[in-house]
Amino acid sequence: MSHVIEKCSAEKHLSLAEQYCKQCNQLVCKQCNSEHQHSLMNYYQVIQEIAQDSAGLNDKLNLWREDKKVHDELFKIQVQDKYDSQLELVSKHFRDLHDILHFKEVELKRELKSYQDENLELYTTIVSQLEHEIQSSTEFLHEFKDVSQVDHDPVSSNNNQQNSDEVKSQVLEKYYKFKKNTNGDDNCKNQDYQVVSLNESLIINVSNTIGTMELKKRFRNIINKNNNDTIIYRYSSKGVERININHDETTLIVGNEAVGQPPSNNNGYLYQNNSADGMLILFGSRKYYMLDTKEKNPVWVTGDWTTNREKTWYQPTIYDGKQYVYIVGGANNGDEANFKAGRDIYKFHVSTQTFESVGELPVTSRFHSLSIDGDFVYVFGQNNSKESYMNRIDRFNVNTGIVEPIYKATEAQIKGGFGVVTGCFDTQTKYCYCMGQQFTFFRYDPSDKSSKVLQPFPIAATDKRPLLHCKIHLDQPKGLIYFYYLQDSSSTTDSISVYNIKENQWTKISNVFQTKAGWLDYFSFSGL
Image 1: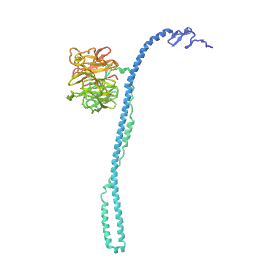
Image 2: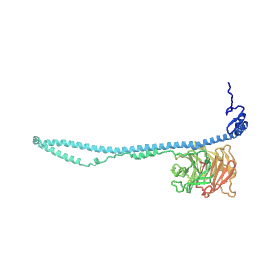
Image 3: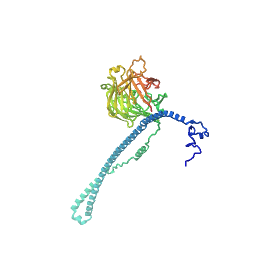
């Protein structure tokens, strides 16, 4: 028997439901229409609205997919890689602690045994002396007893007078000799044993210190919009500054009298790019310098770089965003044989602060720029005292240690404006963006070896000075290339030029630096 509906409900109606109430989020039929007090829409109009929204939903869906992809990449770089490096760091430190404890244990046991050996030697000497005295005393007492018996026996005394006199003489001689020996030097017996014990209070202090080891936790929204700000960390004679280009904010993090700070007047850092997550890493010819700007009171941490065979300085460097800084070539004005430049390639492990030699450039070079794409470091420009700028691009494989040429400008190309002083690599399009010595800006495609001149760099036509020192940085997410340049070593500037890849247009940001920056300064772009 079928159930007869007597009254409309949200699920079932007395007649066909052709209207819809947005406020109640339910269908309405003719029977319940009169009882409904909200405005109604035709059901088919609602369907048309949904269809229109669906088109926009597809766009949102693509955006969410892109956001997920970006979030995955950011999580890997800022969270997963950080975890992996910290896990390795914890393992290293505890391995080191284990080694230190083991070596100290062996050392203390060896020292303890040496004291015990000396004590045993003294013990043996004393016991040997005592045993000798015991034996001598026993023998004397025995002989003295015989002599005493002779003196108290009249018969023996009369019959053996002559023998008795001899015995007495011998006993007396032995007695005084024995007395002389036993009253001799007792220094040996008076010596003290060396009784040593472990200073347990120090052990307790070490144990307590180990017990206080902890992890520092901080929260980070890896897709926070504030992370889109372009940040420059600068080190100069003024100290360390954090510059937010987007908000025109400059903060002095550490002054110019900090303990352990890098020398700012005889080493150049312009070609170094090692700022990430607030950590600065600078390299001299024999030392490295690290500063964690996130600390409440940042302190420079320094260490030795003894493996710098070529004693280079002013080294071009780049951080891979994970755990290594790659150091490629550098300057050495005293090395005329190698044209005042180096060719060695090192990688510096950020967590363990260790250096490893990983390759060589095909030519010695000092003033060049670096870009990184996965397992490859791109080297743009290259310069030494013999050839000046060599107008080339090389690619270094961090896994194999092999350097392969990507681009080498011919004389005709150089005259046509396609020489290379500096450049950067676009990891999405796989294009190389290059700047020549006469400020010709062009794009090079390694896949088909084609070049395209882009919007000319805005420099006065009357200024014929060539490009000398420069720094270039690609902000991949924003599609912007930041360019800083000097035309001689005495120049300084407070501005940075910006190229918009999509719009093919240059603009200039003035007053970026509160004090003008020169070729010795360190500054590195960081979006974190």
